[in-house]
Length: 526
Image (cartoon, rainbow, N blue to C red; front, side, top):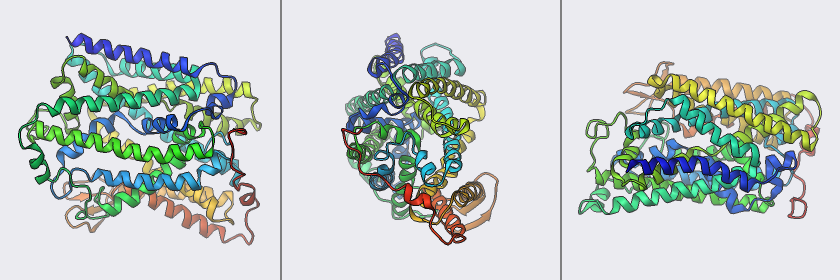
């Protein structure tokens, strides 16, 4: 019977790239390949944005957050972060998007080029490329882990390199032939697939829960939304930390990360992109609520047993996957697993290629490419980045036995760079005297200081007081600064350093006026 699951997964892996190629159609120019000539509906872009920011780790780990939550912290406090996400996207919609969409820019970093110069544009782009390479290499490897476990449960022994190569091939096919239109539409379909898979799990769990489970869950704090008891400096989901830190994090991820900005640029006009990004925040909130609710249902189903000691799992994050493989009937299990794959196959290749060609390659050769040359270079770099992602994912797979520290540290890498990226954009908008040298120095200083903070600053876990500087791993008694503060701290450092350096100049930078947003782009001019 488990063969049916494997057939469903295989159909998904083959069918999604073919569907993307069909939807994408023939690409006529570099702009068509990178931003789809503004022909994507806002609701499709909205779903694509949500899919792009959702990984396998999100789908598998969020239910565990609610499952393991204590009455003090609460099972739904993760949603406080999503509230912050919505606030941050509203700011991006009305402050940064007019500079991108109305300015008809191919990448987010082109704004930095207009405001400061090519040096900062290249610096920001290279930072994005390296960060995305690490993050998506880890994302690809993380996807291979449950696939390997599932295939082993079905008696199929496949190595990590083989799985990673197959997933990478699936991504590169529709990205290469279909461009951003294929990526956005496949993202939207895959997002609906994994959400439908979550609904299937809820339906299956609902019929097998013990009597009185809801009252027990309420008593255990599983439905508590706001956390007022945790220390704001170290509690990741304390109200102040989650809402403020989440808002700034969302401003960076959705305002300065080309992975998201590219999808928004593919819409019809500025208003459409604004609707897409704000709606995506609401959808993410509902999506988090859905997976947290699954965690509560799993807690009732397993009667709160410890995932490792009580259920015999290797780690807590195997909880959801364990239920899917061992409790769901054949067919439904394969459908849900395909949904988990869908959360991981959102392609960043187009964003990597567009940033490479327009922010780096054209700067190196000193001229803009023709429409056809941009298309050829875009496809070439799509393949190159696909190969690099596979190599990096395979590299992490080679160290699977010690992958936890690598994954945890790698997934937090955005904390090193997001503050500098967003800070550079805000420096250009706020500090009119700031020049390119000021911005580059502030950018570099922020990355260095954030590395020091993330790796070295430790707090006492019980009292929340500062322990001191310790570059060894966190222990049972110490903890690092809560990750939602990383981006905000980075922004402050960039603005302070860049602002102080700008005091050397007596007049505003002439580029500040030139980079002002042009009139709103309409449907006719899109």
